[in-house]
Length: 158
Picture 1 (cartoon, rainbow, N blue to C red):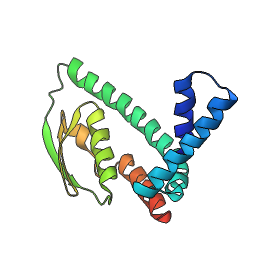
Picture 2 (cartoon, helix red, strand yellow):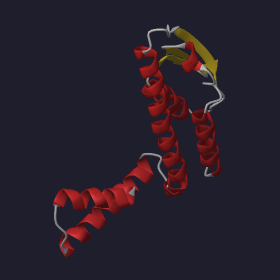
Picture 3 (spheres, rainbow, N blue to C red):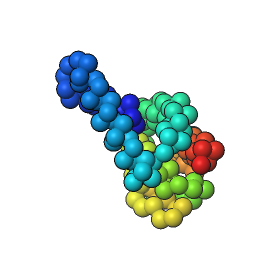
Picture 4 (cartoon, one colour):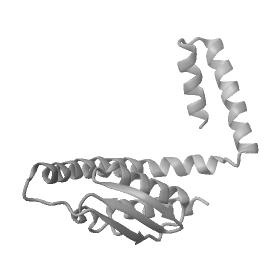
């Protein structure tokens, strides 16, 4: 977070001089101290984020791949006159622990064409699917597995 503060300082100044760099380092340190002291942030969390970066990239790659696959599936359903879509509401439960993981999963489902997360209550998801085929295997999806790995990694750093 310290580096992020410093990077924003440099970008907003638009140039780098010794004075700007020193003042930016001081202000970044003060802001970092403030968030550590009063906003329940720690250097431990900073290191945890660095350990999660490869999983974030993997998650993003899989999300883009699933979006492309779902786009092709929806395109096939729309353009094929013999395929009649069967819209469905699918309910499933997950054993994800953190609220953030559940929200990320709900948003990933909504970002994927042909599916919309209708509700999320505790561990129970309600998803509307354009076709029943799009709903298969949602509760054991690769998204859920990666989010579980992220939660396990986070637990190690607590």
